[in-house]
Image 1: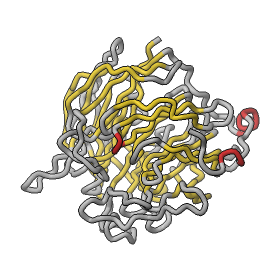
Image 2 (image 1 turned 90 degrees about the horizontal axis):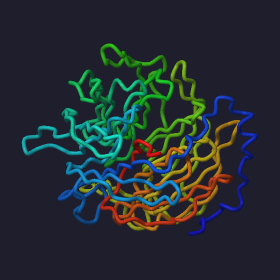
Image 3 (image 1 turned 120 degrees about the horizontal axis):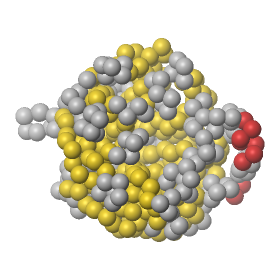
Length: 419
């Protein structure tokens, strides 16, 4: 598939110029012959948010990735309830997932996080334990860079939670829970009627922990006490995106001087300067994930199915920064495309490089293979994984060169390399 729109019209920075302006720039990880890939899903008999039919997925799917071709070979399927978002520990010995569940008939929250050990020789998973998140619809988790804590976000109840992790990967009892304040600060009466915790993660240097609240158009900032697992307000305790944007995910540039926030409701990306010492965000740019003059509009959200994306409308889902720091990619649900952006080496601002179709419906999650060569996109409503080759010189996406049948793929995490 050729890029749609203006891809050919935008110049890409020379690698040398970027290196000169980013002394701390991280190089992509050297490729392995293959590695393991973990795929999260919304499982049967549930219907994914914005889904059009009940899921056929069983839970977690384990694949072996061929680095030369980008192809995937099925290794294992693990039965699990809505293991929608995944995180691999820095040691690559453990995988964690949220179990994105609501409440029972009595109103008791059913959200959980689960821990699995990873067999280094086969990539296969074995359940260790699970813990309640004391909230509903947990939609994101991340392992602190120290490997000592698991961070999770309860979308439904608007709470951010912390769990210590044992040396054996076990999830220990919850150490802290933070309730996002008020009834949301955004104006959308359906999607921003209350706080909606959509992501919780640390910056790469681990000085701070951040919570992304879609309901409040807010980035919350804390410092994590490693001894107690408690959160305390950061020196700069919050930052905001434009009202009604509905911030969803936050991604840091490898040099940790810039940060990118994708906004689900407005189909935009906000670019910030980031100051790691104080955890401060300074706004620099807002840019659309859609082409200029696009016919796609913001949805009038359905209260009975707030994840629905009606025909002719668009919401965003995932944002990823290439390991080289030169490009940023974002998924559009509705346009069903991946937007490509060039990163200015001096300012961090983004310039569109074009759009490629995902060759499926509702591309939700995506991730870049650690060497930076392959991009994997989950077409949630089409039950396919789209595999794109990333141009080493210009960051353009080639493909999809493969469409792999996989039920309701919504998130991807990379495990151990096989050499």
